[in-house]
Image 1: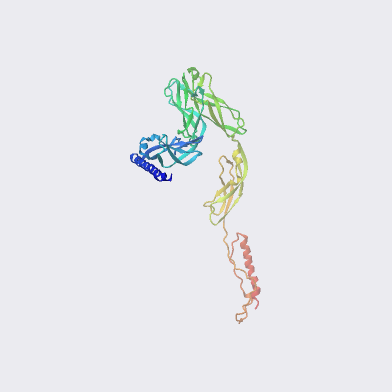
Image 2 (image 1 turned 90 degrees about the horizontal axis):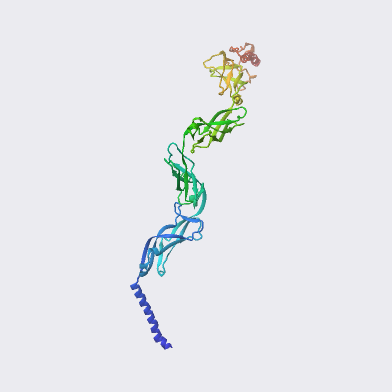
Length: 483
């Protein structure tokens, strides 16, 4: 056995190895490995959660993300049979929620027998934005374009879907798009039509500025629009007359009445329209009201006529009230002051408080501030003397002055101050450092009293000063008689 293994078995193993090596050599020589490149391979999103959707950078829904380049490496004969449609690139977003993500790309083939081919994605990661899908119900409006011919009129549009009247529709899609939708609109052109407009129309969701929002799903996608267009026998434009009922609050009266719009158009037979000159509103109650009273009331068309279809059936009436102006009189004190008094003059006014008889309406008088009432007399260019003048008063609008008071103004020259010598304050103290006197001091009787300057008598102060001056020498005589 060992001999057989050493001879025959060794040759057998060597033969198998040589055969395999020969097969590998022949295979790679006849069918060498090669590489193929496939451009613009779309990436599919797999395993996206419920109520989620992928969107592009503008927030619009997209089924596929950006395309990529795929490199395939494998035997040449297999690559020759591989088509680009056999290459499948996908991004697995399992368990990913709303937000921005970087997701790896996987590449495989949809055909059997190509497992020996290796794929490589470039880029290997792609950004994916996922948003929540929401649903919203919005009102549906119709924008009618154009005008019907004269003697025809259009009625209110009627919207229906599957035979049922409809006023609102449902929109669903990415949250960033749905939140911007304010309403849904339909356009219909009735220009110069003389028969009913009846047509299915698509629906466009719009934002508050009228911009169309795309990338959403609308249910239903379209509605049937019916706009009745009927012949009008006659039309007439008449003013609106507000009917006011009741009286405003006590002390108030109606100052103005305004209605919006001011005119409406009526239709009817010529005989009925000829008898109509205006259209009245329902009664507008104002009992006990004051200030601005605003009411929305319906119109009451006369018998035999109707409002044109495009005219409003209700109008807004604004009524303003104001206090009744009643004459009222009162007497109030006021101070009088002089202005522009010349330099060096003093002024006195008699009386400086006068009583004013004021007249005006109650509301103005009640808000009057007596501290702001002041009379003035202008003394520009006036010299010393006595003047009888009428003061000027600045009164608020609506206040009148009954009877102008007069005051006496006295201007005087300011007195001139007089200088007097200061009296001695006591017995002088001899200077101990001075030399002893060499002569006997003169007796006090020889001292002459100081002569005081005459003073004007306008005030009592100068008289007192003169008396003090006369007493001053007597006060100084005693200390000067002592040797």
